[in-house]
Image (cartoon, rainbow, N blue to C red; front, side, top):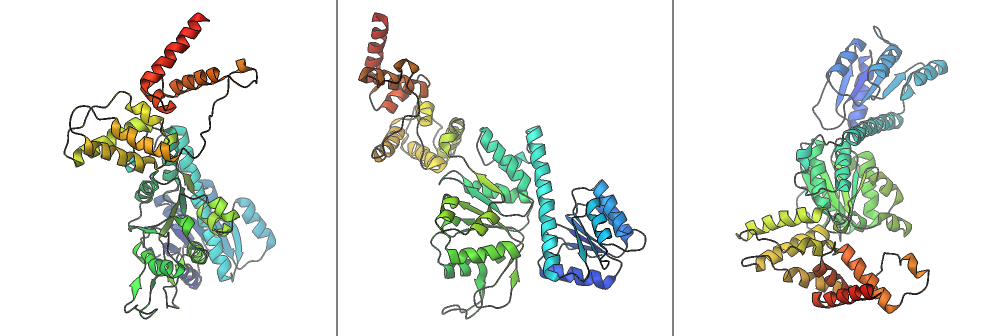
Length: 475
């Protein structure tokens, strides 16, 4: 038996012919699948399964002690999550059907074509990963608990949508499959990538590359490295980022900006786990896990021919969509307190008290720059703060500038006119009253925040409220 410590899933080969074990193991190692156990004695399989987790098993059918069919039945009974591939010289159709009915993942007849053998093993590993993922997700949904809450301490949230993302990341972290993280600029995609790497248990580095603006030559050189003399100025050989990420995670940011030629090379890397450094005809293999992020709509890019469909579907087997801050209103008080603490420490100032209307005021803003913008806003306010209560002026100034820049886009009211209007067009007075009521509702009764929404002073709002009250009393 041979065993090599590795982050890829373990594969067990069981055959009483040593030469078959040797050749099968050599084929898999050349394909980058080198965490192998080879067993000549079929009696050693079940004790091995009792000791450690296995991702896939390949068994010969006719062996002394336990036959492949006996092992298949025992594994399916006791370890149903592990795919079993039966490989034998017997091309008996009835035996093949019996094995498949008993639960075999596949039935291969020796001598097996190399490409089919590797493809079968890869499919079995993916099946095992999916079963593990489903089991983890089911546990997370049923218990509502994370196994590794400590891994998420850098992300401040109390929103259920974010907690669901945490559970999903836990489920897919150890699979080794690609992950696509989508979301607007500033939502914290990079933090989730760091969490995913931490949860994966991988011992290699997390290596980040922003692919925006890289032409194919720069992309290839950055990722794959080059051989000495590969191009003018390449005076020494250099490993690329994919080599640096060995045993770890390669994070490709802004993947939507990757050109089509480079997309083909990335697809090959994902499918085969192999690449060529620039100027080299010697193939290299990698076990790095690929994680990508984008703030673009890749489905729209596919429709426009800017992004390959086969690459998208390969990347999006595991996909996370991070909600923008405007859809995480419960998190605003938590983030405000956290960033205030950070800023106070940075500027060596005492953490100030907050204006009572600040949280409501912020919750009404749409934050186009999301958490990154929110943090910068708070740091700016703290940089200007001297003493006493934190001033609202910085927030009003910055939010006012954003609002002014968006004035060219007509605002859309997402509330319905009351049924009392019976479908008729409202009068100006009715429309004004409805707008005031809606603004107060969204501001949770805070008149200062409601006035800011309406673009009038608090005094002007008070006058209109007094008039509305007088009209109701008079009516």
